[in-house]
Amino acid sequence: MAAPSSTTVQTIALGADHGGFDLKEQLKTYLQQKGFRVEDLGVYSASVSVDYPLFAYKVAQKVASGECRRGIMVDAAGIGSCMAANKVPGVRAAMCYDLKTAANSREHNNANVLTLGGKLIDPELAKQIVDVWLATECTEARHLRRAEQILQIENEFSAEKKIKPIVNPNPSGENVADLTTADLEQIAGQITRILKAQGLSFAGAACDCSCCGGDCGGHCAEKASDTVRQFITLGASRITYRPGGQGVPKDIAAYIDHTLLKPDATRNDIEKLCAEAREYEFASVCLNPTYVKLAANLLKGSSVKVCTVAGFPFGAHTPQIKGLEARQAVREGAREIDMVINIGAVKNRDLDLLYRDIRSVVEACLDGSAICKVIIETALLTDEEKIIACETARRARAHFVKTSTGYGGGGATAHDVALMAEAVRGSGMGVKASGGIRSYADALQMIKAGATRIGASASVQIVQGNPGVTESGY
Image (cartoon, rainbow, N blue to C red; front, side, top):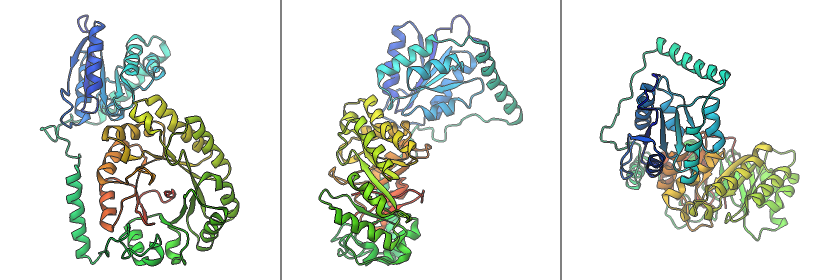
């Protein structure tokens, strides 16, 4: 990287995509008021969806060439832009989310590009991060030596590989990966026509699941086993089955999560639930926390897992209580926890509380080798709020995000699933669509939208992806 001249020492390259535009504008004004010269590289409006790598590349080029002292790039999460900027030789980009990471990235790594998540941190915290990042210098010899080693790795790699510059595949700036609800509906229609052509059709919609003529009573695996086998062929790994049925085929039982989360469930109901799960060799039982210990004892020695909930169904508990609830459940035998977020924290943009809310349960699960699924209750949130919730769950290291509890006045939509899938893309997290899945075509639509796990009402619940993770739901 060329040494900056005296006229560029105080120049900062600043860029953003549509998800980071608002924060970029606030940071630009803030930096200018502090006396920095800001070179705004776009985007210049949030109204058009753009590709973040292109703007991260512009910022990184300015820094690598020596035209700007340092660079700051903002997208929704900050992760992708960090990856893109680090592809430019001479750039050491760091994604920072608090003051400690900001100081460390400069003092220890001599970072010259800062990436921020515009949907993950509030503007005041972002300003503090920028202040620390710009004020901190890398002076220790050992840290400078290690930063130089990074440059040597780049030089050796570049000598062996001819790196092509980034080219915009879509000069109009529109993100071809963005799917509208209308797009998804068109896809679903095409899938439906294909299924009909293959003879895969379903009876009327008198009940939610539509797979057995409206007469399943929540026992599709029993009364429509051929249809369930079609779901399994599609890629389903888990299917929910309500208590009270007469039994299901053995080849389907291994895919079933036996679920009872009703508030009036009794000890006798749970004993029956567990007896059925053991008899039919179901994958798991999902029940309220008060019955976890009982279920774990009843299922000891079997392959059936225990799943429970935290902060259910409204998410209004404090982080401490949710964490304690999860830890107790794990100690008593639960291996999966479905937690409901603090919905008010999302709407208040209290991201610190939201992070602590989710992280309290994630830590409890990690300590007990359990899985944490985060229910964001999409029916109560705007699109912006859904993204904030998903990205905070991602930052908190949850394993899954899930659309709904069944108590929030709505279930999964293809639009929500696509939005959530984009928010957690590349993180390894799963997306659970729960509620409102009424047909085989609906399930395919959700998968097309990005779901790795599908919740179909009236007991048929679809999962694609991780067969080791069980489904829970109301």
